[in-house]
Length: 216
Image (cartoon, rainbow, N blue to C red):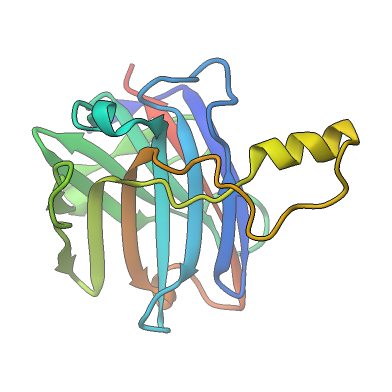
């Protein structure tokens, strides 16, 4: 059993109709610019409409040059938390942690404890995917109706920060269409899990948040 504790990054979203996005680029001082810095959490219906896709991106604002040297931190666990009964306490977790160029996925399973501390139980089984190197075709693995990916990707989040600042300052009243993408040309490290909706719970919606936790 491997224990990891101390919450050092978190992004939270509620999924209604199985689609939502949250953004959080480098605005947490304790983790800003570090290997545990969460950029975004995405959750959406898969191409197979019976599936849901969960995506966590970390280490945002990587330049093309720095992306080639960027790597997942083997001391950082990324955990998708799923609340399927509306009490904002995780009922299921999906965990991802890298080792020697491979991303290991555990879950979904009911955690042995909730909150800031997490444990990985290898006896519960796991799935793996080789981490895709920069500037190569995506490596995707499938098993038990689930699909997995880990590796660098162009940052998919679109936001016109300059226009946003102008609106806040009172020098503009609305966004331009289509606007200027502040994150154009930057990359992130992405962790992707696709799984049947039936694995995350029944009903029309679930709450999902992602945490990064450093091994102690």
